[in-house]
Image 1 (cartoon, rainbow, N blue to C red):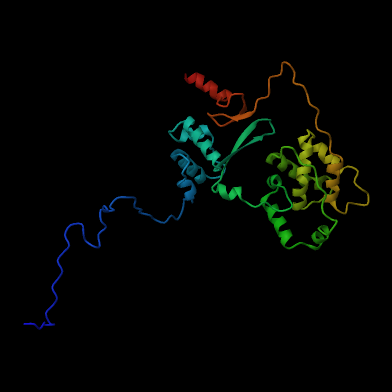
Image 2 (image 1 turned 135 degrees about the horizontal axis):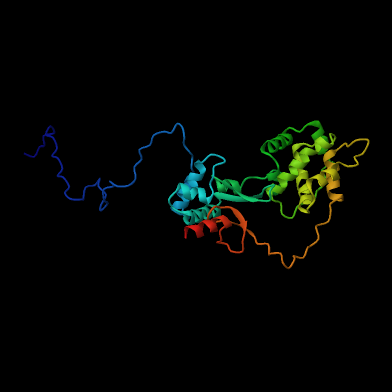
Length: 314
């Protein structure tokens, strides 16, 4: 009776009753809810949107949706407030507030440009990575405001010239051969720098000896912009740079033009007292109805056309 039969199978342990099972979390509910995904790979007509926008902790849901919609649109699409209000049911006031949210967090930029007819238009720029745009490295030997005056292919040519300089470029950058500094505009607007770069690129038509490289154009553009800012017409600037060239030729066109831009810089225009009957010059604002640029003392005012439409509807 004291011996044990090893062939007898061991007895099964009794089942633990209740919620005391060792493999069951005590007190934890069953995770049956929550989001599930049923994803299919996109092959056409899709937009990549970063989670920094889709899961932004400070933007409203309307601003996140509107920012995603703007990133999905093609270049040149109409995205003013009136066009967006016609597309979505939220209304002009809520859409204008969402655009201001996106602008405050860097997902949207609105730049004002003056057309040849003196009309001010607003260009909307959608930025898909504001953090990368803020920390984008600037090209060396150039000021940050000069980058808008240089086309992308010109920036690539400058970078290639720095990596693989030609013999003439090495001679140009030898000690004592650095280009002289040029004047700087007080307000380096991108449109002003672009107009200066276009003027420099056009000098070759008037004086074939003044052929400039992309890097020379980027260096000289702020100097030309300083002339244009002082109310000197582009034709007058071109005449001042190309007149009375040395008969023996110009060995370094960029250095020659840099000297002229500095030595012959005209004085700033005199201050003119406004006439008594002339209305004050108010700052340029965006209309909350159509996003058009106009001058008004009231930040929440609307342009003339939107005011007329509002009065007719009332």
